[in-house]
Amino acid sequence: MLINRLDNVEVNLENGHKYAICDIKMGENIIKYGNPIGHATEDIKKGEHVHSHNVKTNLLGNLEYTYEPDFMPVEKIDSDKIFMGYVRENGDVGIRNDIWIINTVGCVNKVAKKLAEKCGVLCFEHPFGCSQLGDDHKTTQLILRGLVNQPNAGGVLVLGLGCENNNIEEFKKILGEYNPNRVKFLNTQDFDDEIEEGVKLINELKAYANTFKRTPIPVSKLKLGLKCGGSDGFSGITANPLVGRLSDRLIAMGGSCVLTEVPEMFGAEHLLMKRCVTKEVFDKTVALINDFKDYFTRHNQVIYENPSPGNKAGGITTLEEKSLGCIQKGGMSPVVDVLQIGDVLTKNGLSLLNGPGNDIVAITNLTAAGVHMVLFTTGRGTPVGAPVPTVKISTNRALAEKKKNWIDFDASPVLDGNELTDEFLDYIISVASGKQTQNEINGYSEISIFKDGIVL
Image (cartoon, rainbow, N blue to C red; front, top):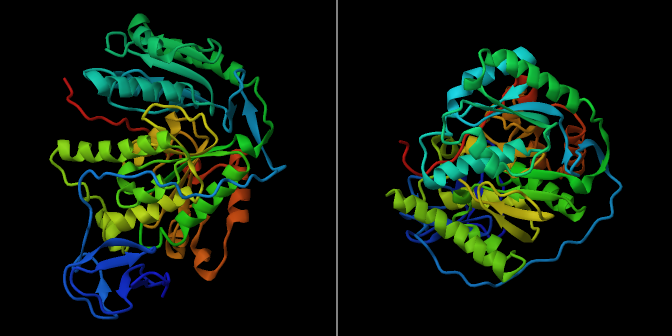
């Protein structure tokens, strides 16, 4: 069993579920991670199972918050650690040198796939780019802009149809300045044989990308996205705290990390708000939380209906419990910025990124924000991968042993008192220097773009 000294439940180390360590009266808060995760709906006796049958969330709608900062400044670490990456002509740094095909519209998905298979490059299918209005159309354009500008791509073919709302000429207005050697454009309606023309352009992009070679780069240039999916009762005990320690270490070295999944901050947001470096960042964080709650209520949905069946089977009972485990991926570093979907990471330190908990949407948002890789913790297991390397970290040993073809790093030894931070940092540097993750080996990479409105 595992107990936090402030808790009134303990975690079973075999199944991740909670059991009362004292009598808990009906209406009394259930405490885990030193914070309430809901309240008892009936009297619970010492030793009894504490889960969905006798616990209910405390979550409500929008709340008012007061800025009461409580954080320690980052103690900088002078480090000579380096990774072997690619320095782009504009000064950006990448850890891969792939050729990407980015579609302006879903109508050319299969053309992109055929070109990718023929030329040995990467494409990411999506259904949007036409028949969208307002914010949804803009979100699609901003995400695609972020993917085109992603520094892990040595070259990019922007593939369009020609008649879509997000046609190439319109998309160029959002894209802004670009390097014509690195970014090529193809309207498929303009050519008798779009495959032949696409192969020609991709070969030009390959020749350009081949001019880049891996060179030593300070670890301070690394940008990591933080994500969890298929969580279980161990997520907030092993893998997420490990990622949090890694995040704090990297930030102390001058690096950058991005925490997303706003609904999985509900119930734990007050802890993040205390770490906001300024009142302005605090106000943005309050808006981040309450605006996403408004998104739920606008669609007549309750804000707490988040833990999935797999989460619950793994021992997670309420959204507060899931959130208190989730935010541990951000360690204890101050929050320096809040990004909206389509924004690009610019500040060193820990930033928060708007967006849902949905795995594929979240990793897409992180990729478009410019992270080099995604650290993805999981207790149930998932093969999903982003366009950038996606490091799968298992919360428990059984998963690591069962799904070796999905899992990259096992955090379960944390239960035996092994901190693992040094080993994990070395592994992350090896990935940044070219070691392939399981999602890369398997060819599992995809995108999904957030939408909130109607489709024409």
